[in-house]
Image (cartoon, rainbow, N blue to C red; front, side):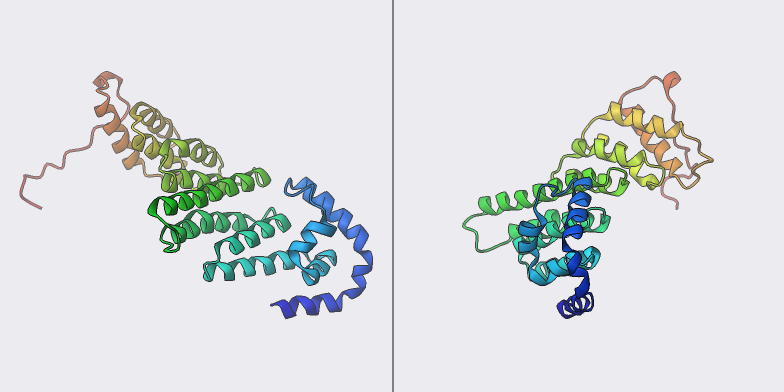
Length: 266
C-alpha cells in the first residue's frame, strides 16, 4: 500500500510546487471542520504522517492519505497494539472528519476491542488496575464519539452509537436516553431507535417516563409506519399502566386478548 502512495506522489511531483496554497486550503478546511484547527500542517501533522504521506497530502490526496492511515490503524488493531491503533484512528479523522465510518468503527475499537483486550491483559499488576484501564478505553470511545458528533451534527447514527456506549459499556441506561431521543428525531432513523428510549426508561426503573414515551409512540399515525411493532408497544404500554395502577378509565393501551385456549392444550 505504501508503494501505491509513493507511485501517486511520483506521478504528481509537479503538484508539490503548489505546496503553499495547498497548506492554506487544508488549514481553512480543518478550521471549518472544527478538528485540529490550530495544528500546524507543515510541522506537527507532517511529523505524524511522515515525509512521503505528507507530500501526498500536500499534493491534494487527502482521502488517499486518510485511507492509508486507517489501514495502518487496522493493522495495529489486529496486532493488539492499542495505543498505536488509537493514534492512527485519531489521525484519520483529522484528515477526514466527515467519514462516519471512521468515527463509528474507531469508537467501537476503543470502547469494545481495546477495553476488552486491556481487561484481560496479564501484564497488569492487578484486577483493579485492569478494570481502570478498561474503563479508560470505554471513556475514550465515548469522548471520541462526542467529537464525531460535533463534526457531523446532522448524523443520527453517531448519536445512537453514543447512546449504545452509555447503555452497553457504561451500564447507564438513563444516560443513553438523551442520545437515543436525539437519534430518533431524524426521519431516516430506523424505528427501533425510538423504541430504545422506552426500553431504557424501563431498565432505569422510570416506569412513568416509559409509559409517557409509549403513549407518544402510540399516538403516531399507525398507517404511516405499518412496520412499527404496534402490538409490542401496546403490550409494553399496558404493562406500564398495570405497574402504575392506572385507573381503567384513564388507560390508553388495550388489554391483551385472551387466547380462549384451555390450560394444558397447545
